[in-house]
Length: 196
Image (cartoon, rainbow, N blue to C red; front, side, top):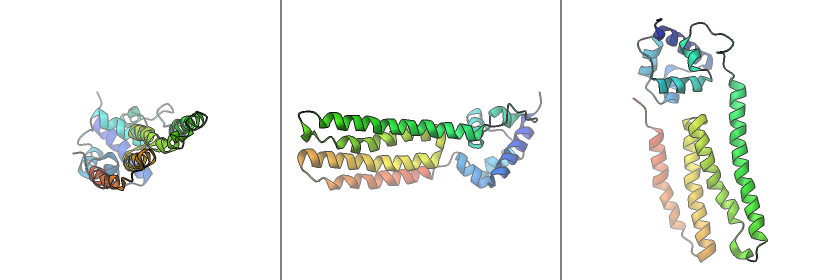
C-alpha cells in the first residue's frame, strides 16, 4: 500500500498556500499547534481521522481528496454550492424561529389577556435564534462563529430574564447582567484553548 504521509503533506501544503495561510494560521483554525501542521506538511505524521475530516471541511474538499495523488473531477470540491446550501439552511432555520415568534405574538394579542405581553415572544426569539446558530456554528461555521454566538446567547438570555421579571413583577434586577461578565470571561478563555 502506498504511503499516505507524503501525499497528504503535498495536498495540505497546496491547499494552505492557495488560501494564502501560514502554517500558524492554519494551526489556529484547526485549534492545533503550528508544530503539528509542520510535521504533517513534512510527511512525518498524519492527523487522526477526526482531524482529517476537520481539515477536509475547512478546505471544502473530501478526505479522499486529501489522501489521493491524482484528483479526478469527482474529488474536486463543490465549495461554493456547499457553503451556499449551508448558509441557506442556517437562514431558513433562523427565519423559522422568527415566524413562530410572529405567530405567538398575534395569537397572544388576540386572546382575552392582552396584558400577557405578546411582545415578549420577540424578545424570546433572540436567544432561541442564538441556540439555532450555535448548533449550526458547531457543525459548519467554525470556532469564530461559535464563540460569537455563545457571547450573544449569554447576553440575550440575561436581557430576556431581566425584561420578563421587570414586566411581570415590576422589579428591576439590573444586577443580573453582572452574571454576564464572568460568563464572557469564560468564553474568552475558552477561545484561547489549543488542541495538543
